[in-house]
Amino acid sequence: MSQADVCRFCSPTNRILKENNKAAALLSNPRKVPGHFLVIPKRHIDKPWELDKDELQDIFELIFFIEQRLVNKLGQGVDIRQNYRPFIPEGRLKVNHIHFHLYPRYNEDYLYQVAERYETDLFTDLDPAEEKEFAKLLAGK
Ligand SMILES: [Zn+2]
Image (tube, rainbow, N blue to C red; front, side):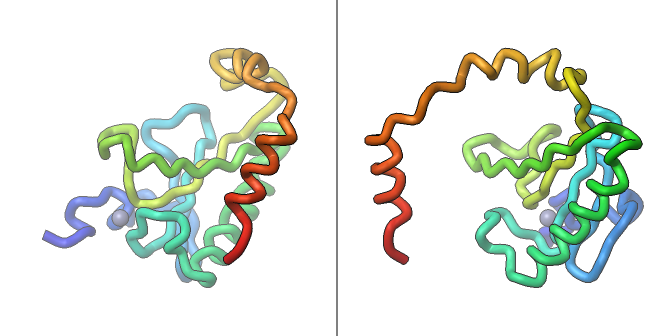
């Protein structure tokens, strides 16, 4: 059995709404809001850092094309999100083939009302010691 037989994003041909050489865009199903797009590489890749430069370029070309089309039609802005969560098993709401979500947004929209308004409590001032620790993490090659 090949990867295309088991992965929904390796063979989404009838769902692709826009594509270029290395990437494709389709609507998320299930979706969070109308106009919830997914942009995927055509090659099956699990880890974001395994995308090559051509795939990254084509993915972000599609993301920004769709973002411009969505602004002032389905929202006043767009969120772009990529989740890397290998600890969640693949299922209806989880596909391992890397994908970038685009959510049309407007002020105090549905996503804000049901989830994000509670996130404001998560923000806290950055501790300088914590910043130093993360600088160490990123140091070197
Ligand atoms: Zn795949």
